Length: 307
Image: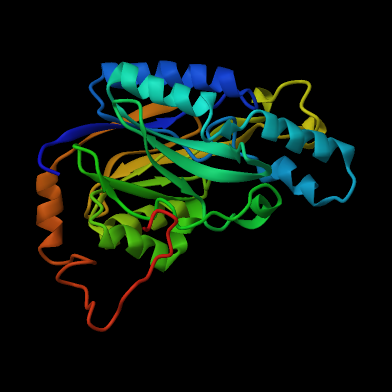
């Protein structure tokens, strides 16, 4: 990372369970962020077409609830195939606005469409899909929705803005997954999430201080009123208002906040990331450099990207 870069951390409600309308909204928000000078635009965990809230996803544990089956089938239908037209459209949005675009999606593999994955897609300013990471272990009720990911994308990579990589929600509690990013030289750490608890902010502070990297952490925002009337499990939403309150934030390598946290509303957080801050904080601690003992401790990552 050689020069300051402006980043945009987006907290927005998707057009819930409508892939194309959600990507339309993503395009408009990306245009807004690019117009404000952002070179990197980051959207929350499974923004497309929505994070499967535990308020209703818990019903998927039932053996024969036809409503649950219909809800899951709807989520599959509106998910993003990789490769596929929706994934290509995200690349077109990145190319149109000349930004790095990081998007959380519900992913379906077109060759094996029976399983969904929680994925992060990194599109370059030329529209190419530069990196693709699937969440290693779905959390709690998520295991009723997504399959387990693999070692793909467990690395930071050079973008021209800096070395970028990331993990999804509670993957960030996996020490070895974090270290895989550290060892690949991460400078801008994406920590997309659906965890809107107060305690998550302590996690973000720790990530920044441990990685000595900038942390960009978009969190999902959802309201029960955002679900379509035809949603098969709509009765599970009765009595609820905000079911994902956000908490998006951008942090510096010392754990201080550059923007946010933002709760209870949609918005775009901006911050300028100055590489001087990286150098200052890494003088005392560099987790994969002078504060590492590879002669004593070593990490092996089984990645499908390996030759």
